Length: 178
Image (tube, rainbow, N blue to C red; front, side, top):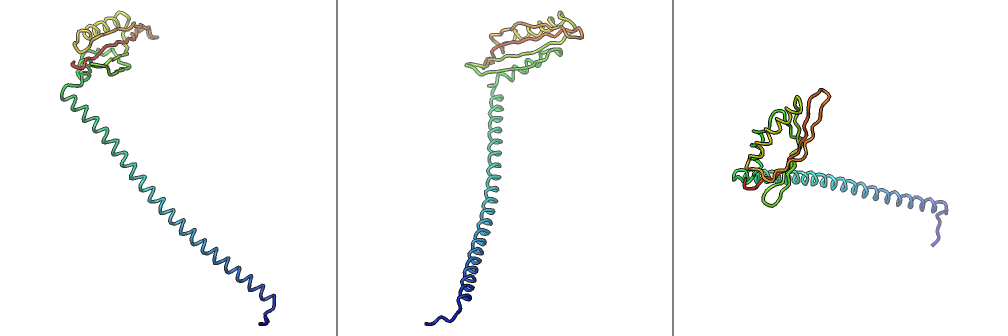
């Protein structure tokens, strides 16, 4: 067999063949990449939808937990197992207008709760403040709801406008059967 095709044409054919193959390979890769990108985008969209559904489920679970705690609280209150409801009712009746509770801390303990109340009284002078506190404290001590009552040292402060402010702390136990 005699090859009559000149070398120049052979080289052009090889280049054309290689270029065609390169273009075909590039187009196959581009098509594959586009398909993969589209598939990845659709998977990401599905993942976002599932995350939104999961967040809704978490929200519903939190609401269910709050509802169950509320229901438990209401059921305990109905059966008189929540002693602090009666204590708050009693305190709302005996606390004078000049007295403010600044904080209330309660910790569960065997047979009830350990409670600490910090408050203050604003009055015209120290004698009036002391009289207001004594009235409150005598009613407080007479309640059967509270036991182991401990009055911490009282702090009397004279304000800039010549009024008196009394800071106090009372610690006590609230009985479960109260």
